[in-house]
Image 1 (tube, rainbow, N blue to C red):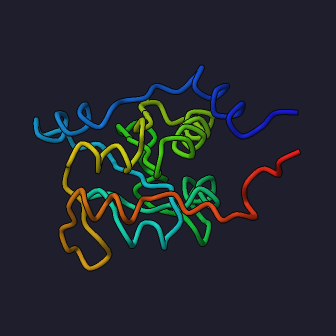
Image 2: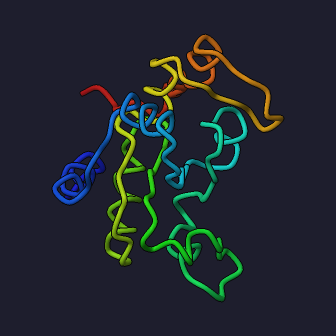
Length: 155
C-alpha cells in the first residue's frame, strides 16, 4: 500500500523542483512563468505569491481542458508555457506537476518548500485584498494546524 509520502517520492522521479531563490531570480530577471497555486481557495486567500493563479488540486485536470465548467483558459492553452506549481510545503505541488506532465504539459516544475519556503526566504506575498504581507505574517498564517485527533494513535 502506497502512503502519501510514497506517492510524492515516486512523482519526484519525474518532476523537477526549484528552490524559492531560483524562482525569485527568474522573476527578477524578467521571467514570466505561470505561477499555479494548487492550494484550496481559503489558503490562497490568506497568503499567496503575487501574480499566482489559484486552481485547487481537486479540479486541476478539468481546469486544464476546454469545455468544462472548471476550465481555466490560461491552463487549457498553456501546454508549452513555463509553469511553476506551488502549494504550502511543496508536496501537493509535486503531485500536481506530475499530473500536468502526464497531461502533456512540457515545461513544469514544482516549487520546493512551497509558500512556506517563499515566506522563509522573505519574498513578496499578498492576501486576497492585495495587501502586502511580511515573513512574520507568513509564519503565523502557514503554521501547521494538526489537531490532536489527526495525530497517529500511540500504541
